[in-house]
Image (cartoon, rainbow, N blue to C red):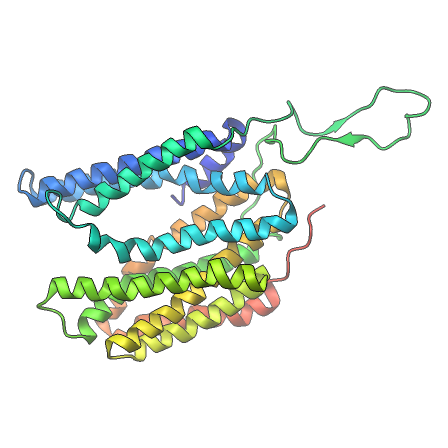
Length: 374
């Protein structure tokens, strides 16, 4: 995803956003379906453990390679069809769908374990969801073919009265004729991308260790089903908190991208500290809910801030960078978090807290409210 999302985003400017959305959903369906098949074959003894693991990993990579075409295409599609005043709300809603999915997916997964698929059940169901989305995409979403053959000015017919008149420009929501490739260290984007990387890593670590924390603190080592159910319940409450932030607080309070990132990071920091200090189910649930509420504010702020910082025809490239940043957070952060948790439980929470504290202090001066691009 880190490598391919920016490439797909730039290609969406040429081939159209709807086409890349379809490719991404097909990649998702293929990945979930084939991963489910490999898991089912392995659990039932038709193939060995090594082949199961290798096959699962290869088919999982289909999502990173091809599924990553969808998120930046969706963001660019929305940004190209909303006015600046509406774009913040639209992108916040879009970011909420991605952020909510990272929490509500694990929360619902244990309800989808059923015969004959067993533990492969969630993957099969998610693949069926993807097929439904693909059908709706093909039948309901309008095409996004360019309205104009090229970008730039349209010169009026020369006449004595029009020689010095301002020339008209085509609307800015056409697909760009030339490939847009912004620098990763572009002044308009750098601070927002750094913020996304810091906050994303903290959230990824939190999602990686919370299940182990629940198992250890509630002494459920010998009760795997109870541990899964307790983890699912905690994550479900977290999903509701994320939903409250993104579908309630942001639209009602009209929180700016900067404040959304800073206040979200502060709430996430308090939630992480509460979770790390709790030794019972209710304390862990409260802490995780506060952290989810914070991350629910943070993610739309980061996404919207980066989008509003650039012009409309640059949205495809920026959307690719945002998707890449989101993917980068899940490469090593969960593994590092779990490793630190195994060595010393507070270590992973200290790391998350330090990252968010730095983001809050640094972000107060580094994150300005995006000015309207010229």
